[in-house]
Image (cartoon, rainbow over all chains, first blue to last red; front, side, top):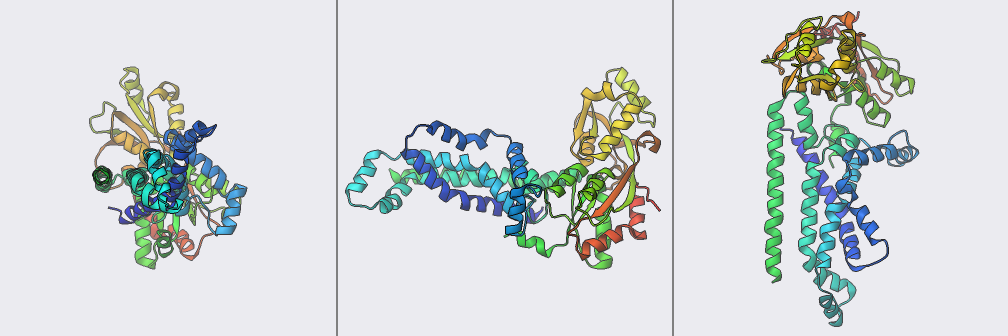
Length: 222
Length: 241
């Protein structure tokens, strides 16, 4: 069992949520409220990482931020490290790959709030900010929770992008899913088996949690 | 953040997948004798070269050929041209229960192909893995390459090709001698070492990269020491004088 790899995986999952959730709430709510020409295109762009092969994302990130690109060299001189083959680079890749997992459930959550509830809240004299925190967020909570848990589970399972953008650096970019691949290549089926079982258990527990929690939140609303 | 973990570890070293067991043993002995550790990342030489060009933080690179490290030194990414530290060998391998009989001239494979008995045959991807290129040369020399192509399964690295050759429905494969000899590999089948004259020599070169620190430099010298050479020989490599 590679505990360092597990730690990298958990950090990556938590970091992706920390970056994406605030953005997802803002953008999902905006999409739920607005209707505009070209909305279908915006929604398609949000969803595209869902169907795109991870290699496409990996390719663009390496070409854009690799040591041989001007942008990569600029980043290197500012940050003192390169974006590919670093934990920061993995976070960027993971955040992009998870956009649909965050935005869609949150958008559905906000869409499910009836318009008259919002009107009533405004009529009662709540400021837009109070209305958002006291009325909208609690009502959209199942969507937000689903977004967070799906992102976490999906990040733990990410493989292609991680290997392409991160390489396989222990303590930095070797996640649990990459460690399994690495152990398989070393004929270490035992370790690979233990880690595969660990990921399976974490994934099932995570998904069960989302079902149970959203049911409870749903009950409280009634 | 996990990135702080790396600072406490030793330098990261990129190594061709055929070194998986030999180099780990050398690194363990290095740690015992010199009290310093290195982190080794194994992969296909081509993949690792690409990663180094894209800015991966490796301090040293042990390739499975000369072409890839030469490309890096040509691009000015290495300290110097490096040295050849080992010469690798290819084996024809058949897993236990396979209908393939192994021999140096690949007569058994030819016979089996004529009978239509070859389901899958494993080699490493010639584009990124030097051992795959050597395997292609052997198959071409025996006039089998074109006929066998539809049956080939290609691993990204020679280690993955070895996985393919031992599991699944492959009748065998052309894989690295060093991996077949590894204790972790165990007794998974029969093999025969392919004559060196049947493919361009697998002269394996290593280089220190520009950012190499003191520990990586020490390790680079250690790989050329008598102790490390003995380990390489034990794992089936020829060691240049």
